[in-house]
Length: 481
Image (cartoon, rainbow, N blue to C red; front, side, top):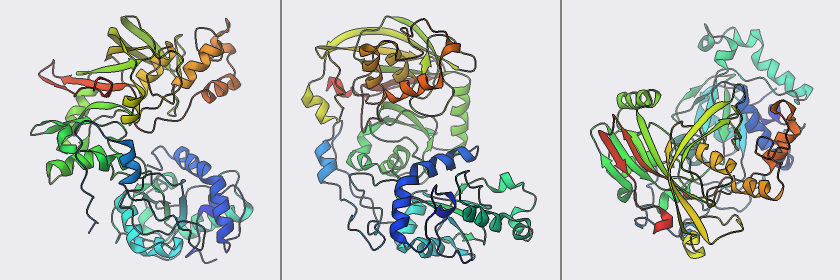
């Protein structure tokens, strides 16, 4: 069978579809793109992990306008092509919104340049494919991964055809590797990269975009520049080091350009996209390793300002976080075997006016419908452990979610209106941890919302290391402006 122009989504899709029917392909992808991504992420131990000039950002110091994101950033041409997808041109200018995910899985039937193969297989313009590769949205594996249990007999047959010993025996690229090693994915880094017959390709045709990056005066966000590192006051609504399908629209990339550096800055640690504040970026690979060592040795101290919806007591708060790398992060006050301990210290908590609607709109902070909006509570927090979403999850468990946190505040509201809905909370109706059912956890997860689109009331206000020898502070948080 000739697979030169066949989407390998046919091997992964949950339903059978004709390879010659573009309309059916569109409908199938519309139903299966989430399962495709989930399958890819769970299959392997690592995540299925000359340019057009960047538009000049409009300087705005500390603020930006949500309306500017809507009106000043050009949209992708959304006129439908013959196969029902948008007409593709270039990835820049950045659209103001994200298109629905489209992940294509391909297998190479004839070796050659990766750009040429993808253009032919997916009917995409060469410059668009070059942009995808530049954004880090194209991955390869030497050997095709195993299809999911929902694959049809035809799909399984195709998989066996390209992974049979007779097909693999003459491939020198996989000699000395186990099949699992050969199925590991890596980024395609150049349009001229050669891909041999049988190579698996994963193409994120609609990478997750970050229009916020083009609205920032990045030079105004630089806190310090040293020989081995840069400290950035990260804006909310941006990614420190990028996503699986976009390593271009990141704080590291735009800070590098703002400073005119010849070598790219490297990520040393992460804070959530919706969080603003201090981030350390390494100027060299060596210092990146040095800073990682400081984090491991717990010599890096991070202080946060959190704008909570309810007061919190001064002192140390301890929870245990479910060891599943998926949002929302669930925490329990009671120790559960295998769950990760999370500790933070509330240094101070003071009552402040609830931000006005105008301020929240200016900084794109969502309302989230908290019932009492007279006062908020600004808490200074010493983060003692560094788990993903830790502050957000712990404060929510305490009944004091962070303002604008559309992912966790709905859960706190649900706990108020329906005490006991949180199976790990204070009102779990005297049930023991052993009595908690999977359906209880599923119901609690469903009470959470989507990740905030831009910012929340959380700032990494200070970072220091080497016993305070190096100490840096962020600017004024948005709710004080």
